Length: 325
Image (cartoon, rainbow, N blue to C red; front, top):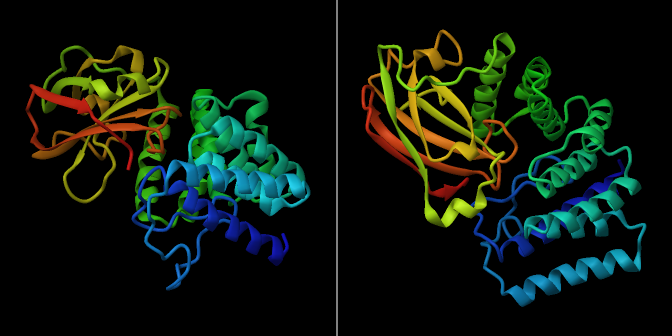
């Protein structure tokens, strides 16, 4: 990829941040989607400026300007990148997918563009990206075997097919290139989950635990969020240590259609034998509803959390009450 194209892509991503500001606040600069890892923000740069909410009319004017630039010069990849980012960041995923398709046609050998395209496709189809929709992931990984987004998406797609060994292999390749500590910690959790799933069938919690240490209660959904949950979304209920590793010491995976649900977490739901609930005195108990069916939180996912709570509590009320942040 030429340096000029990379600079234009970075500029497009920075401009897209201004469109995103109309939707929510971002306390830190957002990495450019089509340009790889973001460089440190420099004083006075777009990424370093405090983001000010825009009026809806300003957002639409920004999108219209991006659309006009792409129409004036259909071969300008940076214009299509800006349009795709702008649509995606305001949640217009179908339109973003069309713009990414144009961008991918112009940059067929750009692994990051292909990964961004598949990510938008997944968002437009409620996380479903199997079959033809997933093929650009394979092309992206052939072009760049270390592309972080392609590795993460490939693992997600393999998990959806219940190919846990493939999900494990891709996520293990992603771990060394996941520089962000929070992402690395979440990725390690998913690696442990995939390793456990690859070794044996999915375990479901019994209605009453077999004995020993347990935390139990009921998961409910805040009324304001009920319409945002689809029946085939995946609900993860977990307990993790209060301090140190964020890897769950117990993990229950259920379908969102079962909500509200009773849960009981004990050592039978340990992800790895070395990390169990029983040695803990207190834990954080949480729930994640994932559109994409994996334990790495993503935009659009919903969450709830309690803690610290003493191990042995069996009357917990855990509410899904906020989006992932």
